[in-house]
Length: 154
Image (cartoon, rainbow, N blue to C red; front, side, top):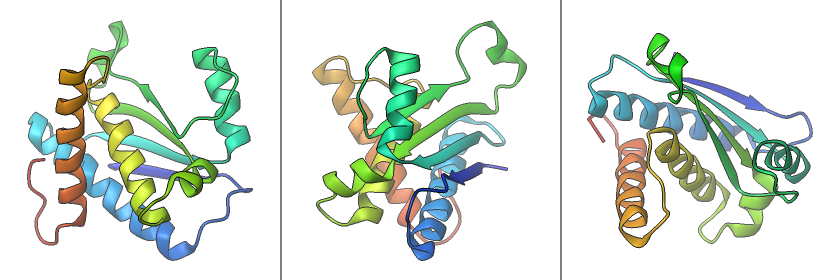
């Protein structure tokens, strides 16, 4: 399985957006695996509220405020070699995504998922060069997500 999508009970999201997002994020995960020469990657995506993501941000990053996306990589540390197909978990606040959305909620959710997926793949944005590389990778993933036909490397 490429993607495990969970939606918190208190998140309101149109079923069509949920289904389309799940399909496109799964496509991005499969494209990332193909690029890495892996048979597949596994990612869990949780859609939550500002309160839900704030609790995680406080517990794991020491920041007591909501954020848009958190990425919890499973490919770090000594246990990473045991299950190289496990990329990790993404958590997105739908409330924050709604506030940030310029081109619609679905586009913002896909943008945040691609950003978080890049973090799981080892990208970061600590300086301008890293940010350019990460943004280019995220754009390739989003292009693959929207493309029809066989999945390519992205």
